[in-house]
Length: 260
Image (cartoon, rainbow, N blue to C red; front, side):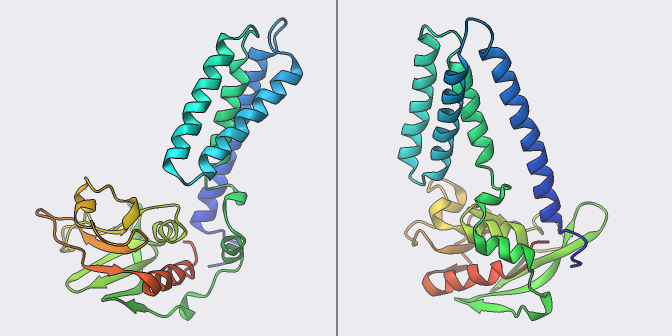
């Protein structure tokens, strides 16, 4: 990958940051126009309510516990309703706008949402030739080209093989799975009739609903395990399950692959 040509992931991230930044500016301008009109919200209250909305929204996205998130969301709705009913005309506008801005600032494309290790890997990508195949717990992983778009283009991906299951996955989806930002990676060969096996998913067990097709075959497995699951009818069991050291080793290996 040439240093002068940013990766597809970097280009998409910059585009998303630009779009989100413009959206944030538009929201704040509209909030100011609506709330700072004569007789409505004073400037000090506008700034305080906007900042409070941003802080609460950031807290919602930082907190990992689902129940705490629900309580915070209920709190946001309650505060907005109380402000709307208050004597200060339009008081809920900057708070709700701030909460929306905070949600946008919590998106994964922003640099502060990535760890120093992730930023270091992005700035100094490892040569592909130095990345050796990985294997453990009945699963093997090697680099392989995967299709991108509809023009026959390809990029570096990963071929996962477990028994008679062999499917290719996108690197960005494996990165999301390894960092905890995503719960499932889906094979790119799912819609290719010449590739047997249909859809195959690599799933972090604790993100799969027990009531889902995939989750039903994962009941009883450790929450931090990674399971390679063929999606068929009827559903078979996982083709491979990575737990403990093998799961951690695979995550670390996947993160050594440069973003495409």
